[in-house]
Length: 125
Image 1: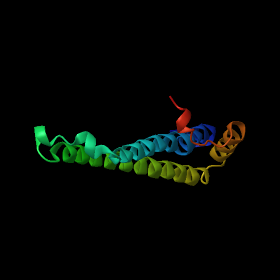
Image 2 (image 1 turned 60 degrees about the horizontal axis):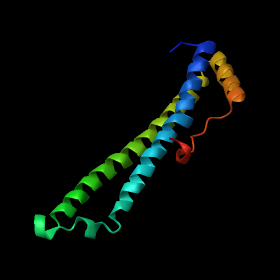
Image 3 (image 1 turned 90 degrees about the vertical axis):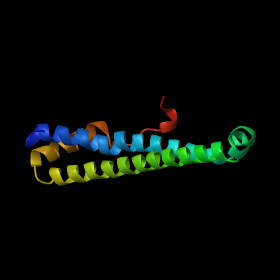
């Protein structure tokens, strides 16, 4: 990363974009997957009950253990992505206060391109 001036401002804009668009968008994808996984408990008991073959609740218990582990990974990933996004934006804010050239470049890029916002996850493919 450049030490100062316009080039630093460009890099700060890229970090700001990642903190305001890329990482929050990805965090939302993980959060939606987490919520969808949590919804799998509805009506699941009848689908996984195979007492005749596996004994009482063995398959259901195994599924719930797996689901709960995956749910935790997805939830933690969403939270970590959100926190990383916040940290990037905090770092950009601190850097721009120390270099006038970088601040001017960052301000100009934000004016030219608009403030980045996370994407609508429902429209992503």
